[in-house]
Length: 415
View 1 (tube, rainbow, N blue to C red):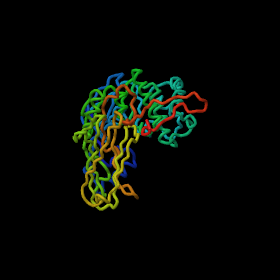
View 2 (tube, rainbow, N blue to C red):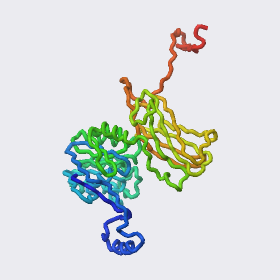
View 3 (cartoon, helix red, strand yellow):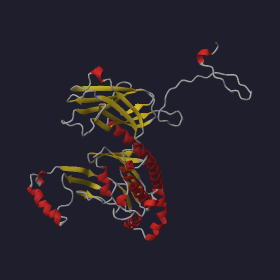
View 4 (cartoon, helix red, strand yellow):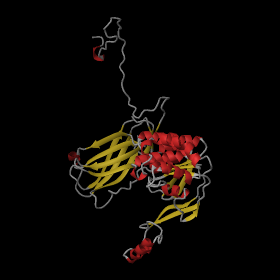
Protein backbone atom coordinates (compact mmCIF):
# COMPACT_ATOMS: atom_id res chain seq x y z
CA UNK A 1 0.00 0.00 0.00
CA UNK A 2 1.36 3.40 -0.97
CA UNK A 3 -0.26 6.61 0.37
CA UNK A 4 -3.67 4.90 0.56
CA UNK A 5 -6.68 6.89 1.76
CA UNK A 6 -10.34 5.91 1.83
CA UNK A 7 -13.22 8.36 2.19
CA UNK A 8 -16.89 7.65 2.78
CA UNK A 9 -19.79 10.09 2.55
CA UNK A 10 -22.48 9.69 5.19
CA UNK A 11 -25.71 8.64 3.53
CA UNK A 12 -24.01 7.31 0.39
CA UNK A 13 -24.80 3.61 0.09
CA UNK A 14 -23.45 2.91 -3.38
CA UNK A 15 -21.97 4.48 -6.45
CA UNK A 16 -24.35 7.11 -7.90
CA UNK A 17 -26.04 6.20 -11.16
CA UNK A 18 -25.09 2.54 -10.97
CA UNK A 19 -28.65 1.57 -11.96
CA UNK A 20 -31.70 3.33 -13.43
CA UNK A 21 -33.33 3.21 -9.99
CA UNK A 22 -30.28 4.93 -8.47
CA UNK A 23 -30.42 7.69 -11.06
CA UNK A 24 -34.14 8.34 -10.49
CA UNK A 25 -34.01 8.23 -6.69
CA UNK A 26 -30.87 10.34 -6.76
CA UNK A 27 -32.75 13.20 -8.44
CA UNK A 28 -35.35 13.29 -5.65
CA UNK A 29 -32.73 12.81 -2.95
CA UNK A 30 -30.72 15.79 -4.14
CA UNK A 31 -33.83 17.98 -4.35
CA UNK A 32 -34.50 17.42 -0.68
CA UNK A 33 -33.25 19.33 2.32
CA UNK A 34 -30.00 17.42 2.43
CA UNK A 35 -27.75 18.52 -0.43
CA UNK A 36 -24.82 16.50 -1.67
CA UNK A 37 -22.35 19.20 -0.68
CA UNK A 38 -23.59 19.04 2.90
CA UNK A 39 -22.75 15.37 3.43
CA UNK A 40 -20.24 14.71 6.15
CA UNK A 41 -16.99 13.05 5.11
CA UNK A 42 -15.55 10.11 7.01
CA UNK A 43 -11.92 9.20 6.29
CA UNK A 44 -11.51 5.55 7.24
CA UNK A 45 -7.88 5.53 6.05
CA UNK A 46 -5.46 8.45 5.82
CA UNK A 47 -2.21 8.24 3.83
CA UNK A 48 -1.33 4.67 4.87
CA UNK A 49 1.98 3.17 3.71
CA UNK A 50 2.31 -0.55 4.37
CA UNK A 51 4.41 -3.40 3.00
CA UNK A 52 4.00 -7.03 4.09
CA UNK A 53 6.50 -9.53 2.73
CA UNK A 54 5.62 -13.07 1.69
CA UNK A 55 5.51 -15.42 4.68
CA UNK A 56 5.01 -12.68 7.29
CA UNK A 57 2.23 -12.70 9.89
CA UNK A 58 1.04 -9.20 10.73
CA UNK A 59 -1.38 -8.28 13.51
CA UNK A 60 -3.65 -5.24 13.14
CA UNK A 61 -4.95 -3.58 16.30
CA UNK A 62 -6.94 -0.46 17.08
CA UNK A 63 -10.19 0.67 18.62
CA UNK A 64 -13.54 0.29 16.88
CA UNK A 65 -13.64 2.69 13.94
CA UNK A 66 -9.85 2.88 13.66
CA UNK A 67 -9.89 1.62 10.06
CA UNK A 68 -8.90 -2.04 10.50
CA UNK A 69 -11.73 -3.52 8.44
CA UNK A 70 -11.40 -0.88 5.73
CA UNK A 71 -7.67 -1.60 5.45
CA UNK A 72 -8.37 -5.30 4.91
CA UNK A 73 -11.13 -4.58 2.38
CA UNK A 74 -8.76 -2.41 0.37
CA UNK A 75 -6.03 -5.05 0.51
CA UNK A 76 -8.45 -7.76 -0.67
CA UNK A 77 -9.85 -5.49 -3.42
CA UNK A 78 -13.35 -5.53 -2.00
CA UNK A 79 -13.13 -1.74 -1.71
CA UNK A 80 -11.24 0.65 -3.98
CA UNK A 81 -9.13 3.33 -2.25
CA UNK A 82 -10.10 6.96 -2.77
CA UNK A 83 -6.45 7.77 -3.42
CA UNK A 84 -3.17 5.89 -3.40
CA UNK A 85 -2.20 2.46 -4.71
CA UNK A 86 -2.75 -1.01 -3.22
CA UNK A 87 -1.24 -4.16 -4.74
CA UNK A 88 -1.20 -7.82 -3.70
CA UNK A 89 0.64 -10.76 -5.22
CA UNK A 90 -0.83 -14.24 -4.94
CA UNK A 91 -4.16 -15.80 -4.04
CA UNK A 92 -6.04 -14.10 -1.21
CA UNK A 93 -8.35 -16.00 1.15
CA UNK A 94 -10.39 -13.43 3.07
CA UNK A 95 -12.59 -13.94 6.11
CA UNK A 96 -14.24 -10.60 6.76
CA UNK A 97 -17.76 -9.80 7.99
CA UNK A 98 -20.49 -12.42 7.77
CA UNK A 99 -22.02 -12.27 4.29
CA UNK A 100 -18.84 -11.48 2.37
CA UNK A 101 -17.60 -13.98 -0.21
CA UNK A 102 -20.53 -16.43 -0.34
CA UNK A 103 -23.56 -16.32 -2.63
CA UNK A 104 -26.64 -16.53 -0.37
CA UNK A 105 -28.74 -18.51 -2.88
CA UNK A 106 -26.12 -21.24 -3.35
CA UNK A 107 -25.64 -24.18 -1.00
CA UNK A 108 -22.63 -24.55 1.24
CA UNK A 109 -21.21 -27.20 -1.11
CA UNK A 110 -21.63 -24.96 -4.17
CA UNK A 111 -20.02 -22.02 -2.38
CA UNK A 112 -16.94 -24.09 -1.55
CA UNK A 113 -16.36 -24.75 -5.26
CA UNK A 114 -17.25 -21.16 -6.18
CA UNK A 115 -14.66 -19.74 -3.76
CA UNK A 116 -12.02 -22.14 -5.02
CA UNK A 117 -12.72 -21.11 -8.61
CA UNK A 118 -12.43 -17.43 -7.65
CA UNK A 119 -9.01 -18.21 -6.16
CA UNK A 120 -7.98 -19.75 -9.48
CA UNK A 121 -8.03 -23.38 -8.33
CA UNK A 122 -9.12 -26.22 -10.60
CA UNK A 123 -12.05 -28.45 -9.67
CA UNK A 124 -9.65 -31.32 -8.96
CA UNK A 125 -7.62 -29.16 -6.56
CA UNK A 126 -10.79 -28.16 -4.71
CA UNK A 127 -11.92 -31.79 -4.47
CA UNK A 128 -8.61 -32.74 -2.81
CA UNK A 129 -9.27 -30.21 -0.04
CA UNK A 130 -13.04 -30.74 0.19
CA UNK A 131 -13.06 -33.45 2.88
CA UNK A 132 -10.75 -31.40 5.11
CA UNK A 133 -13.01 -28.36 4.71
CA UNK A 134 -16.12 -30.35 5.65
CA UNK A 135 -14.41 -31.98 8.63
CA UNK A 136 -13.10 -28.67 9.97
CA UNK A 137 -16.41 -26.84 9.57
CA UNK A 138 -18.44 -29.51 11.38
CA UNK A 139 -21.62 -28.69 9.42
CA UNK A 140 -21.72 -31.64 6.99
CA UNK A 141 -25.48 -32.10 7.52
CA UNK A 142 -26.18 -28.61 6.15
CA UNK A 143 -23.86 -28.48 3.13
CA UNK A 144 -26.77 -28.90 0.69
CA UNK A 145 -28.73 -26.05 2.32
CA UNK A 146 -28.55 -22.50 0.87
CA UNK A 147 -26.22 -20.44 3.04
CA UNK A 148 -28.87 -17.72 3.41
CA UNK A 149 -30.50 -20.08 5.93
CA UNK A 150 -27.30 -20.52 7.96
CA UNK A 151 -26.90 -19.01 11.39
CA UNK A 152 -23.96 -16.61 11.80
CA UNK A 153 -22.05 -19.36 13.62
CA UNK A 154 -22.61 -21.92 10.84
CA UNK A 155 -21.61 -19.36 8.23
CA UNK A 156 -18.43 -18.55 10.13
CA UNK A 157 -17.47 -22.22 10.43
CA UNK A 158 -17.74 -22.82 6.70
CA UNK A 159 -16.19 -19.49 5.71
CA UNK A 160 -13.15 -20.04 7.91
CA UNK A 161 -12.73 -23.63 6.73
CA UNK A 162 -12.77 -22.46 3.11
CA UNK A 163 -10.33 -19.58 3.73
CA UNK A 164 -7.92 -21.82 5.65
CA UNK A 165 -7.89 -24.84 3.32
CA UNK A 166 -8.13 -23.49 -0.24
CA UNK A 167 -4.37 -22.92 -0.54
CA UNK A 168 -4.47 -19.12 -0.55
CA UNK A 169 -1.07 -17.43 -0.50
CA UNK A 170 -2.43 -14.68 1.76
CA UNK A 171 -4.93 -15.34 4.56
CA UNK A 172 -6.86 -12.30 5.78
CA UNK A 173 -8.94 -12.60 8.96
CA UNK A 174 -10.99 -9.82 10.55
CA UNK A 175 -12.61 -9.74 14.02
CA UNK A 176 -15.31 -12.07 12.70
CA UNK A 177 -13.90 -14.81 14.98
CA UNK A 178 -15.82 -13.14 17.81
CA UNK A 179 -19.01 -14.65 16.33
CA UNK A 180 -17.99 -18.24 17.06
CA UNK A 181 -18.10 -20.16 20.32
CA UNK A 182 -14.99 -20.52 22.48
CA UNK A 183 -14.11 -24.03 21.24
CA UNK A 184 -14.30 -23.01 17.60
CA UNK A 185 -12.25 -19.87 18.27
CA UNK A 186 -9.47 -22.03 19.72
CA UNK A 187 -9.73 -24.32 16.70
CA UNK A 188 -9.45 -21.34 14.33
CA UNK A 189 -6.46 -19.87 16.15
CA UNK A 190 -4.74 -23.25 16.01
CA UNK A 191 -5.34 -23.46 12.25
CA UNK A 192 -4.04 -19.93 11.75
CA UNK A 193 -0.85 -20.87 13.59
CA UNK A 194 -0.52 -23.87 11.26
CA UNK A 195 -0.98 -21.61 8.21
CA UNK A 196 1.67 -19.23 9.56
CA UNK A 197 4.14 -22.08 10.08
CA UNK A 198 3.59 -23.24 6.50
CA UNK A 199 5.15 -20.00 5.24
CA UNK A 200 2.00 -18.31 3.99
CA UNK A 201 1.20 -14.66 4.71
CA UNK A 202 -1.35 -13.93 7.46
CA UNK A 203 -3.07 -10.60 8.17
CA UNK A 204 -5.04 -10.75 11.41
CA UNK A 205 -7.17 -7.90 12.79
CA UNK A 206 -8.56 -8.51 16.27
CA UNK A 207 -9.35 -7.13 19.72
CA UNK A 208 -7.98 -10.38 21.17
CA UNK A 209 -4.54 -9.02 21.99
CA UNK A 210 -3.36 -12.31 23.48
CA UNK A 211 -3.99 -14.03 20.15
CA UNK A 212 -2.28 -11.20 18.26
CA UNK A 213 0.89 -11.54 20.36
CA UNK A 214 0.86 -15.34 20.10
CA UNK A 215 0.30 -15.56 16.33
CA UNK A 216 1.95 -12.45 14.92
CA UNK A 217 5.60 -11.48 15.51
CA UNK A 218 4.82 -7.97 14.19
CA UNK A 219 1.77 -5.73 14.46
CA UNK A 220 0.55 -2.34 13.33
CA UNK A 221 -1.57 0.09 15.33
CA UNK A 222 -4.29 2.06 13.54
CA UNK A 223 -6.04 5.06 15.04
CA UNK A 224 -8.63 7.17 13.22
CA UNK A 225 -7.46 5.84 9.89
CA UNK A 226 -3.77 6.57 10.42
CA UNK A 227 -0.96 4.09 10.95
CA UNK A 228 0.50 5.16 14.30
CA UNK A 229 3.14 2.48 14.82
CA UNK A 230 4.61 -0.79 13.60
CA UNK A 231 6.90 -3.14 15.47
CA UNK A 232 7.12 -6.27 17.65
CA UNK A 233 3.61 -7.25 18.71
CA UNK A 234 4.31 -7.13 22.46
CA UNK A 235 5.63 -3.56 22.21
CA UNK A 236 2.76 -2.39 20.02
CA UNK A 237 0.18 -4.00 22.33
CA UNK A 238 1.79 -2.39 25.39
CA UNK A 239 1.70 1.04 23.74
CA UNK A 240 -1.90 0.53 22.65
CA UNK A 241 -3.00 -0.51 26.14
CA UNK A 242 -1.16 2.43 27.71
CA UNK A 243 -3.03 4.82 25.41
CA UNK A 244 -6.35 3.60 26.79
CA UNK A 245 -5.78 4.75 30.39
CA UNK A 246 -8.43 7.08 31.75
CA UNK A 247 -10.06 7.61 28.39
CA UNK A 248 -13.74 8.41 28.20
CA UNK A 249 -15.36 5.55 26.29
CA UNK A 250 -17.60 6.35 23.38
CA UNK A 251 -21.07 5.30 24.39
CA UNK A 252 -24.56 5.78 23.06
CA UNK A 253 -25.59 6.48 26.66
CA UNK A 254 -23.42 9.60 26.79
CA UNK A 255 -26.34 11.61 25.49
CA UNK A 256 -28.26 14.58 26.91
CA UNK A 257 -31.45 12.55 26.55
CA UNK A 258 -30.12 9.87 28.91
CA UNK A 259 -30.20 10.27 32.70
CA UNK A 260 -26.66 8.88 33.27
CA UNK A 261 -23.36 9.46 31.42
CA UNK A 262 -20.07 7.62 31.91
CA UNK A 263 -17.25 10.19 32.09
CA UNK A 264 -14.10 8.11 32.60
CA UNK A 265 -12.77 4.73 33.64
CA UNK A 266 -9.23 4.39 35.01
CA UNK A 267 -6.98 1.74 36.49
CA UNK A 268 -4.70 2.89 39.32
CA UNK A 269 -1.62 1.01 40.47
CA UNK A 270 -0.65 0.41 44.10
CA UNK A 271 0.74 3.97 44.29
CA UNK A 272 -2.47 5.52 43.00
CA UNK A 273 -1.10 6.39 39.55
CA UNK A 274 -3.00 5.71 36.32
CA UNK A 275 -1.38 2.85 34.46
CA UNK A 276 -2.29 0.31 31.81
CA UNK A 277 0.46 -2.10 32.88
CA UNK A 278 0.29 -3.35 36.48
CA UNK A 279 2.20 -5.79 38.69
CA UNK A 280 0.30 -9.00 39.35
CA UNK A 281 1.60 -9.22 42.92
CA UNK A 282 0.20 -5.80 43.90
CA UNK A 283 -3.38 -4.63 44.51
CA UNK A 284 -4.89 -2.14 42.09
CA UNK A 285 -7.93 0.12 41.93
CA UNK A 286 -10.60 0.57 39.27
CA UNK A 287 -11.96 4.12 39.26
CA UNK A 288 -15.28 4.99 37.61
CA UNK A 289 -16.50 8.57 37.17
CA UNK A 290 -20.09 9.11 36.07
CA UNK A 291 -22.64 11.90 35.99
CA UNK A 292 -26.33 11.76 36.83
CA UNK A 293 -28.33 14.37 34.91
CA UNK A 294 -31.77 13.44 36.23
CA UNK A 295 -32.72 11.55 39.41
CA UNK A 296 -32.56 7.75 39.15
CA UNK A 297 -33.88 6.33 42.45
CA UNK A 298 -31.96 3.28 43.64
CA UNK A 299 -29.13 3.65 41.13
CA UNK A 300 -26.58 0.82 41.46
CA UNK A 301 -23.09 0.40 40.02
CA UNK A 302 -21.33 -2.79 38.90
CA UNK A 303 -17.80 -3.30 37.58
CA UNK A 304 -17.20 -6.34 35.37
CA UNK A 305 -13.67 -7.63 34.78
CA UNK A 306 -13.12 -10.06 31.88
CA UNK A 307 -10.26 -11.62 29.97
CA UNK A 308 -9.84 -10.78 26.30
CA UNK A 309 -11.46 -14.13 25.57
CA UNK A 310 -14.57 -12.86 27.32
CA UNK A 311 -14.18 -15.02 30.43
CA UNK A 312 -15.74 -13.07 33.31
CA UNK A 313 -13.53 -13.16 36.41
CA UNK A 314 -15.18 -10.46 38.52
CA UNK A 315 -18.63 -8.87 38.74
CA UNK A 316 -18.72 -6.60 41.76
CA UNK A 317 -21.80 -4.53 42.61
CA UNK A 318 -22.18 -1.50 44.87
CA UNK A 319 -25.82 -1.18 45.83
CA UNK A 320 -25.91 0.78 49.10
CA UNK A 321 -27.42 3.79 47.37
CA UNK A 322 -29.41 4.97 50.38
CA UNK A 323 -26.25 5.57 52.43
CA UNK A 324 -24.56 7.73 49.79
CA UNK A 325 -27.52 9.47 48.26
CA UNK A 326 -26.42 8.14 44.89
CA UNK A 327 -29.02 8.55 42.18
CA UNK A 328 -29.52 12.28 42.61
CA UNK A 329 -28.12 14.75 40.04
CA UNK A 330 -24.37 15.34 40.23
CA UNK A 331 -20.97 13.83 39.46
CA UNK A 332 -19.73 10.72 41.25
CA UNK A 333 -16.44 8.91 41.62
CA UNK A 334 -16.40 5.26 42.68
CA UNK A 335 -13.29 3.20 43.42
CA UNK A 336 -13.03 -0.58 43.67
CA UNK A 337 -9.94 -2.11 45.29
CA UNK A 338 -8.91 -5.41 43.66
CA UNK A 339 -6.55 -7.72 45.62
CA UNK A 340 -3.54 -9.38 43.91
CA UNK A 341 -5.35 -12.57 42.89
CA UNK A 342 -5.54 -12.48 39.08
CA UNK A 343 -3.28 -14.24 36.59
CA UNK A 344 -0.83 -12.51 34.28
CA UNK A 345 -2.57 -11.33 31.09
CA UNK A 346 -4.82 -8.71 29.51
CA UNK A 347 -8.21 -7.71 30.92
CA UNK A 348 -11.12 -5.47 30.00
CA UNK A 349 -13.30 -3.41 32.34
CA UNK A 350 -17.04 -3.15 31.81
CA UNK A 351 -19.31 -0.73 33.69
CA UNK A 352 -23.01 -1.24 34.44
CA UNK A 353 -25.32 1.38 35.97
CA UNK A 354 -28.97 0.69 36.63
CA UNK A 355 -31.66 -0.20 39.11
CA UNK A 356 -33.28 -3.42 40.25
CA UNK A 357 -35.73 -3.03 37.37
CA UNK A 358 -33.66 -1.86 34.39
CA UNK A 359 -30.17 -1.22 33.01
CA UNK A 360 -29.59 2.49 32.50
CA UNK A 361 -26.05 2.17 31.11
CA UNK A 362 -23.83 -0.73 30.05
CA UNK A 363 -20.39 0.05 28.61
CA UNK A 364 -18.59 -3.12 27.60
CA UNK A 365 -14.81 -2.90 27.15
CA UNK A 366 -14.58 0.61 28.58
CA UNK A 367 -10.89 0.05 29.33
CA UNK A 368 -8.13 -2.50 28.79
CA UNK A 369 -5.09 -3.15 30.96
CA UNK A 370 -2.38 -5.74 31.46
CA UNK A 371 -1.06 -7.59 34.51
CA UNK A 372 2.61 -8.61 34.42
CA UNK A 373 4.67 -10.72 36.77
CA UNK A 374 6.71 -13.87 37.33
CA UNK A 375 4.79 -17.15 37.44
CA UNK A 376 7.77 -18.91 39.11
CA UNK A 377 7.57 -21.77 36.63
CA UNK A 378 3.99 -22.67 37.52
CA UNK A 379 1.20 -23.09 35.02
CA UNK A 380 -0.98 -20.00 34.81
CA UNK A 381 -4.34 -20.04 36.55
CA UNK A 382 -7.12 -17.57 36.02
CA UNK A 383 -7.35 -16.73 39.72
CA UNK A 384 -4.41 -17.15 42.09
CA UNK A 385 -5.48 -16.87 45.72
CA UNK A 386 -3.16 -16.89 48.71
CA UNK A 387 -4.73 -19.69 50.73
CA UNK A 388 -3.67 -21.03 54.12
CA UNK A 389 -2.51 -24.62 54.68
CA UNK A 390 -2.76 -26.64 57.90
CA UNK A 391 -0.62 -29.82 57.97
CA UNK A 392 -0.07 -32.22 60.88
CA UNK A 393 1.38 -35.68 61.27
CA UNK A 394 -1.29 -38.25 62.17
CA UNK A 395 -1.12 -41.95 63.15
CA UNK A 396 -1.98 -44.54 60.52
CA UNK A 397 -3.82 -47.86 60.97
CA UNK A 398 -3.93 -51.09 59.00
CA UNK A 399 -7.24 -52.21 60.47
CA UNK A 400 -9.70 -53.16 57.78
CA UNK A 401 -12.64 -50.80 57.60
CA UNK A 402 -10.96 -48.04 59.59
CA UNK A 403 -9.90 -44.70 58.16
CA UNK A 404 -6.24 -44.40 57.30
CA UNK A 405 -6.07 -40.75 58.37
CA UNK A 406 -8.10 -39.29 61.23
CA UNK A 407 -8.09 -35.51 61.15
CA UNK A 408 -7.87 -33.57 64.39
CA UNK A 409 -9.01 -29.96 64.17
CA UNK A 410 -6.06 -27.59 64.78
CA UNK A 411 -7.66 -26.04 67.87
CA UNK A 412 -7.84 -29.50 69.50
CA UNK A 413 -4.26 -30.63 68.80
CA UNK A 414 -2.57 -31.49 72.14
CA UNK A 415 -5.85 -31.37 74.05
